[in-house]
Length: 318
Image (cartoon, rainbow, N blue to C red):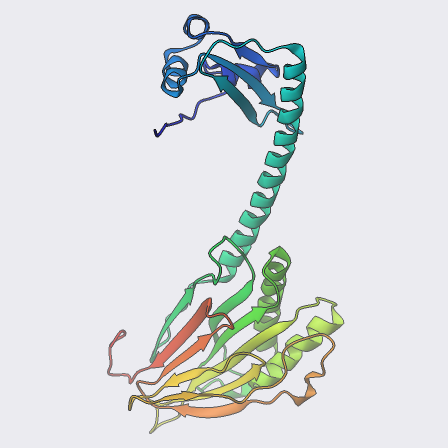
């Protein structure tokens, strides 16, 4: 049999609400007593459950009552003092478990909010179609260090006439907890700052600047990423794009070429870690023809970003 449970306030005419409100055990000895002292909703609910006798024990929280523990019998039953003491102890243990569960749920909720704040909408860029997807690898509500990012960089002071550079990143900070989500946010922000503070520099230089800040500021981030710069080629090849990237131990980017073939960009360096020397970090270059699809996945394929090039005459989504 299925039962429906209403949500009601602590001031409602229910024995459970009374127990929580008065912070004491409330015993209902019979359906007649229930009908005499409480409202019709409580009578209907207890009748649906087939209860004759019920004991309602408040769950004492650290700040306020967390609810009520109810034990019921389908026949008349007398609760003695010893049983009431046992039920009070059981309610205390239950309350501690509920508080711990609420605390963990709150931490996970905060981490989810932090992670979602980092997964921003992708800006519109002329000549590029872009999309991003975040899908947790685990069935449970876990958080972690996966992120993607795409933003347009201002031109270097000595190259203001050049087309704008688009920065594209996919990364995975080690861990599946709130600390990983926090470090992901710091790493993402430091990488953006490095890109802005080093105009005209390639992805390898930018990632080395990130690693310098990570090490000197004792942030402690470790993980993998691919950082990419995309820029339209100058005329007469304005429909093509120049891609430069550096790979810090991340799964290789995948190109789906206009002729139907695919290509993995295997070039990569060491992952990011405060104890590793970033001096060997290098950038790689590739020209992308119109219609090329670039896919950047994470290690567990839980997050990803893709960018496809199109000619100026094509409409987005073509």
